[in-house]
Length: 113
Picture (spheres, rainbow, N blue to C red):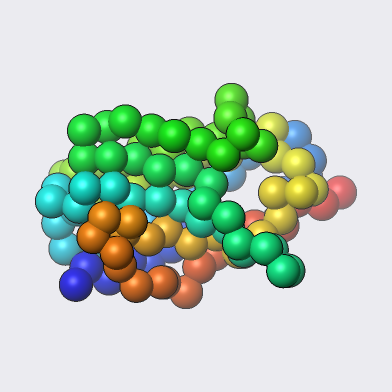
């Protein structure tokens, strides 16, 4: 099973940007779908997904602000986050959706002035 390691989180002011990375220990070429999730106190949600064909989808609260992408050569999935809001504060995780994969350690994103 491919292991995933998230990075790129941090403290940013409202309106700022961050790019999260999800580095895989092996090839992601054969993974049918991958996603970025976030966990805030009492709530976990799927934020963005990308399929092996490159199709993407987003939860409504981040549409137009977040962009998921992947680099097959680097075996890395990215989440570009722009116009960040305090409500985006959470621990962000990437995970293989199909096939279902394990959870990584996540990366903390804090949006605060």
